Length: 169
Picture (cartoon, rainbow, N blue to C red):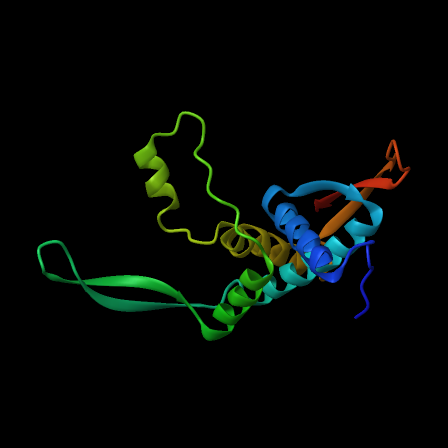
């Protein structure tokens, strides 16, 4: 698949696209040039499609663990099936990590408790929020794809590059 060069060497181009796809999936909207937006849209839709196929593939298992008093306790744990784990790793390979940010007025202990379970925030957001939303939309409308929207803003001052807003629909 031929990609746009975007006037950059391949390592810088891949880093730029990874960064913009990560920000698009995390924030839901980014502002960029038209050429970049078309490439970012393509990659974001590909990753979302992978997540949609695998978002429901989980299995519930019982695990024996020891608590603080050295007693054996049975826990019900939801694990990924192998296909979902492979999809998760494929998406993690492409997306960057966004560090957790402490919310305004949030206590340090509350912050640690909130982020303790989530290791890869962007990937979790894709599998827990974005993929189920689009899977439901696909089932209702009977069509796949079209997860992003490009809204043109006009030329940028200075170099007259066509600026757009790329957002998740």
